[in-house]
Image (cartoon, rainbow, N blue to C red):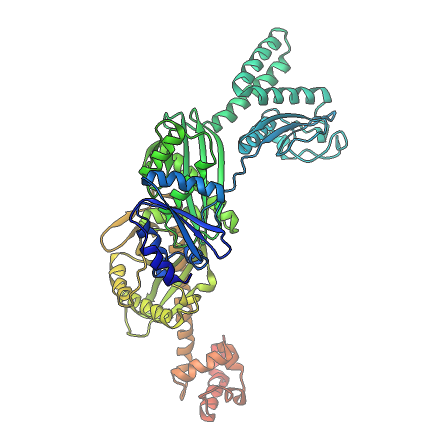
Length: 617
């Protein structure tokens, strides 16, 4: 069907709850959705696609026809939607790979046994502990056991590599007994392995009790060396478990979910707690998520997909923002669980700290997928939250004015892309519309010229052809007030803020026309803003010094009869330095545009008379 026919069919749908099923020409189901009013929701797809996210536009282009199923209520539609998506796995729904396969802890059958984490169990004579549903938990358990009991985590093979090398750093920080350096006997090594396996089988509580009994027995039998080793292991277990212990504000069982976006990708991170302790972590990277995608809708879709794959649903789910249909989702999850499930949106306290930990994890995963650093994305996310932006600003432009008592009035523009300086995007401006010192008028001119370039290059989507997600001005409310009318005159809506410094020239706040926002309590945002302000100031000052130096050099030439500002500028552009001009012959000077023979002879006489030798520099 053509788009017009699809819209006509959609407009004939009832205003009833239901599920709609989009299909392509091959009768493949490509999207399934639910609606409170089928006519309203489905007709939106086949109207103007101007406001659709890219992913929705691609889906609509592939729709040949659609079916629908009427339901008694929106809740019934939600249940049916989840069931059908789980069954058909449509291409354009958010689909999550359920990688919750079993994992194992392997104890090799060698004489020098090694403990490792594996995803599959094989018939190799080794001992296997498990299976474990959480690969993250099993891997963490192995890492902890190796550290506590000083067992090697490297790939060296024993006894082949015994005593063949110097111990690595782990030996010196007391996290490995260094069999590679011959620092431990086979008997003591196997005793460590046995204790580590006991720890993995029984958990830290029972393991500590067993080791405490053994320590007391060793002390009574005057085996103080063994007692000391056991004491150190008990302390190591307690240190490790204290680090892993994350108290969730007195709530014994909950999931924490946060989303992070970067460019066209998004990542959902899930931290799972039981008895106030983190026991599992999952990350779901979604490619081609789309910049314009509705985050509330995406969160709702994620919750439906995620809990359709999970048997155990906690009574509390902490979220970083409200999903679409949150009350309906809570009712659906409550029915799945058989008991009430509620959403939390914490703004402070312990829950908010846990949520921030989850967001940092999502940022790290998302950044790694694009070759960036997690702290950069976290800083952008924190900045977006601080300034009330809908999305983390991927492209930031910052401006500063520099002059000396109104002379050599210039401006610098720096660009930060995904939290990093993007130096090929830097630009310099010489103020042309007036002379003298007026920072407000200077900033107006610079932003006017920048927007005019955007109009000329908008089709390229590169350089000035791209609009920033955020503009930062070095200055306060005055600069913001001066520039905002410029943006409005060009019909662009770009978040605009000034960066305010304290008496020691350090960034202390950001401001718009009506408020000042302190940033010192937001460490990552503070660091990013300080870096941007320092960089734009450095860049503008550098250009100002260069311009002033050229003017000084040029003025030394304008004292020569017949050499005005234009000829001085042309000579400097051609020869680059005063010394090269002073050493040039008359015929060489004539090669410069605007120069004639009398002017060239005047320059030559000026530098070759005995009284001007000291001017050659």
